[in-house]
Length: 205
Length: 315
Image 1 (cartoon, rainbow over the protein chains, first blue to last red):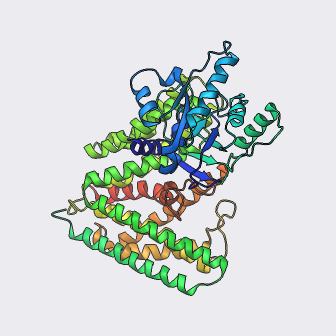
Image 2 (image 1 turned 60 degrees about the vertical axis):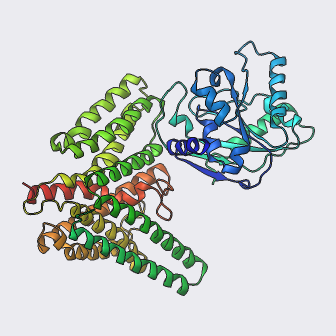
Image 3 (image 1 turned 90 degrees about the vertical axis):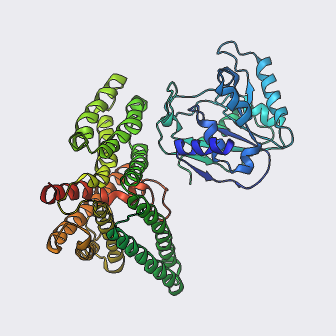
């Protein structure tokens, strides 16, 4: 089932994967990417080699993925997603956010990797918005894993926010070099550096 | 396959023989050539030859299995070409719905018309009705920024990637007296002459090419390559006259016309790439680039070949 979904996704997204880190290294990673489309994590997931794909879990909002019949099936059985509660804008509390981060760190265990979208929501027109603090806290909790920035190119044109049906253009998934976590770095500095790392992969070969 | 046309069998055998010769030549080149820069060229040539094997086999199997095979093959080619074209085109969110219709309705419909043999609608569907539809759908979406550019680029994409390409399997619709059930050989003639003209222009250009025709568009296209390629591919076209309804002198005129149109197709598609700042349309075919990079020479040759054949030979 997983390879069928990955095949269809590669067909629709016409994705070329570009690797600036080692695609064969079997180690725990947190892939963090820009977010412009519902197809984003499927695109990353399909671009991974099967061995890494089996170990990776996307982090997704339960408000979208727990609805209906197909989505929960895909989220649990195929993608094995970590579903988190996304607080409605304005009602965000530090407690729910911190509990979600805690859960992500735990759900990784000793073997799994995560795909996260630090902007927290999809942007329009392919812009990369400011990163929320989740990635910073997650990186502090799991200092043992590798952070990998990922740039998704053109997915916003394949399935823009608000559209139901995809237009099958070509896209690229650029996996950047491992992103170092520096000691004594302020939260906002870390987040700005992480965002710049993602943006820096635009057009990467 | 049970009653395969002997003409087609001979053409397929000829293509296979040519590929064997090309592979042997590639192998010799690898053994003979030393030096870093030339080695890169030889590796690229060998990658191209390997890809030619795959493309020739897919083409030969599709076209010899009859109408369905040809129509399905060229539908897929149009689909892949259109996706490469639209990816590079400056379209925005306001074009999403119109593009969806282009991919999933206009493209299959155009090829379905070849299947049903409805020539009248086939010849006007995209230039008239789909063009009007695209303009309306884009206007209804409401984004007026660069409206004309966005609409025009979508219409152009459909015209070159779907409408022009569909003229290749449309050759099966022609009724040529004394040539019934042989139309697949016309597809072979067109594709083989035009693609060989591409290869021969490359070979002549690499070996004796000096004077570029239009350096700003394509520095690799030279007068020597153009003339050598057109003359030698036209000679091949004449030598294939027995597979066509043409007499040798007619085959000469037609082969010459389609090789020149093939050159123009390559030049124009290169100009679009330059204006978008890319070298290739995609990475689908190793050594060749994308689908559009491979079929650029067929785009303008196909409709001209179709109409010449239809006007002078069909009833």
